[in-house]
Image 1 (cartoon, rainbow, N blue to C red):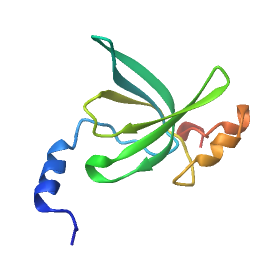
Image 2: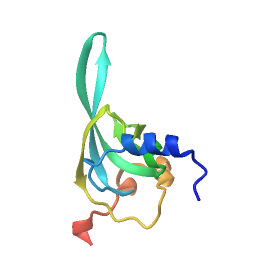
Image 3: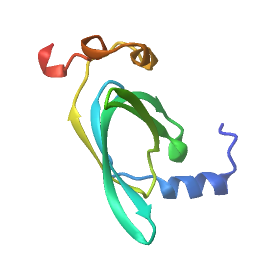
Length: 119
């Protein structure tokens, strides 16, 4: 039995998006995200590796990590946010764990993830 009030549960279920692709931890994704700059709305693409997923219905999040100008950048996205325009799965990674936090300590070739087609 869920501890969530039925009205809250119904509201959260109405916020769920069904147009998002299936992706897992280890996959490389390109997240097209809407950004407001002043009075303009533009789309920015954040391409990186999914290192964490938090599955919690409408409050689900996923963390994407990329290396930009030799600095690691991580961003947490709300999965069902209306600001996400689309998510493209660039490649499928083969990993054996649910959280890839250890990638933060690795650099260069050591931080690579095997691709599904290489297995």
